[in-house]
Length: 275
Ligand SMILES: Cc1cc2nc3c(=O)[nH]c(=O)nc-3n(C[C@H](O)[C@H](O)[C@H](O)COP(=O)(O)OP(=O)(O)OC[C@H]3O[C@@H](n4cnc5c(N)ncnc54)[C@H](O)[C@@H]3O)c2cc1C
Image (cartoon, rainbow, N blue to C red; front, side):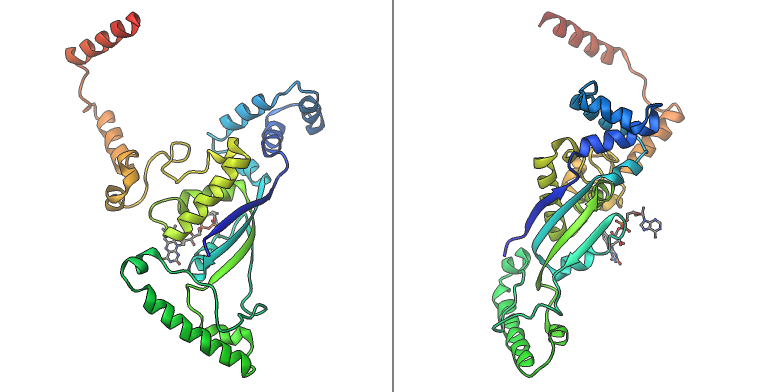
């Protein structure tokens, strides 16, 4: 089956929750007084969004832990799930069990990567998994419990999740897993999570980017060769280039702006003034 990602639930009013969390830090008002001002509309939604947006540019990140998102994720492989559950802070997982769920009729759902299809080897994969399914069924019929029969099953076997993740960890997850260096299936799941948040809470969804995004680091911190090979590398500088540039600036090596540049500036100013 195709991968499915659904945003099931989230903090009821994430912007208000973040505004309250940040405002309480920086205000002489009590939380109740801040809440009163929100409820009688002395503080508007727009004001809250602007305030939160400014805070998101800072290193004050602990308030982001106070907003939660709950997702249902289906049709992912166990190859993906091994990677997913390595995230351990600010995220909670429930995953379909291979102990309590017994596959029926010698079949189990699985994913065939597009690269295998393109290599013309999908048929061989299906044939092997058919055999595995048949043996699995024989084991179950012989009384082998599902928790042991599953030893036959491949990484390709599909699984489902219900997860809860806070906004700070979701940002981190997107930093790592929207990066081209992450595995394609993880990129796909993370992109679908981003799309769900963007749809339901656009003011927060737009912050979900790979770490080189303009709302995150703004540059690539991966290996230089990986950056050179990355399609986003045309739009984002590599960290080493920024340091080189800064070094040149500190050493006074940056080329002076000359008469030619000033001519261009003047030309554009005049053109701008005429329109
Ligand atoms: C491209 C890529 C390749 C990878 N390859 C491999 C691989 O070959 N082998 C492998 O084993 N793993 C691999 N990983 C997994 C990786 O090592 C992490 O386990 C995984 O990405 C989870 O991220 P995290 O550690 O940031 O955990 P998260 O739970 O997402 O942690 C969030 C943040 O909390 C902080 N944090 C979490 N735990 C602690 C702690 N105990 N102490 C202090 N601070 C903490 C850190 O700042 C951390 O970044 C890979 C990941 C990526 C993205």
